Length: 370
Image (cartoon, one colour):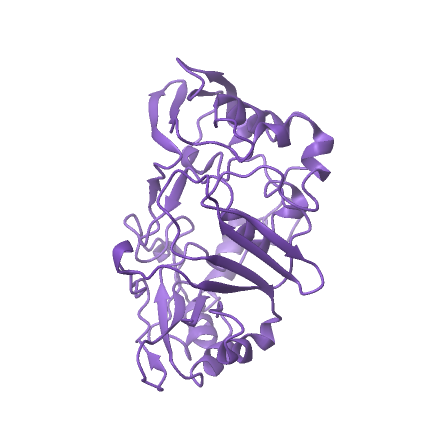
């Protein structure tokens, strides 16, 4: 079983993957901010079979990924293999249409903003019902913020929508916005079935024990509360390319136990994050390679400029911000893991992505400026 470690830094993500052959040394590829080193391989070069043992910090409290209790990172990882994501993130953090679910998704008008989706006619839920415009409409109605009985983790974007309608067929969806929403590609992912969203009680509690209806390359195998594991298996009804894995086994492993679990073969990878300890211990594990990828997440310092606060005055706020040496902070946190840790300087794009630009110059560090 190949061993892999995945880890996110402030502006770069470190990865550790197992090495093939008999090399017993740890391979550490030089970490350079904004550079991908993920060893991507063509699908036909990947062997069929095997079990990926995936560590999580906890099992999900609710399998509805858009309900407040189901929005943890671990919960999202587990359910992602079983529900539709209309767009998938690429290596450079751009988005690509997932044609297993959609034939097309087009912005056809900007005033008003109108998006039209065409669902893949092969796409079906595990109950046999084709994915249709009704699933989009039910998801919007549940989490557009108008019905407070629905405990949604977010209404962002959905609250901008004026209507979700049927197009020429049940697989044609027309979404009209009341207010523009530039990140429309983030909506309806993951897409949940209308059966989950029709009633607030079902939305909030219906999937507490397990997901009832899925539509992914994998289906639920077994939830073992005693062993604290969740198994997902290839779904024979899946209409897309066959998964290479025979199983993904999610296992609860505490953070400090991750390196030992990887070394023993109990898990197949782990996420380093910004933990120097996990990184240093990873370097001692045989037959692994430390890699990195461009990460879409980042850490930031927020300043409270609300009325009545000391930093409400813009000039004061800027002066204080200029005394924060973000380069030194980045070096202190990430220096042991990267040769060039630097502040991001952008709240929308990270280094290594197409649209990235450092916008921090107007408030650059100036220790004497205050």
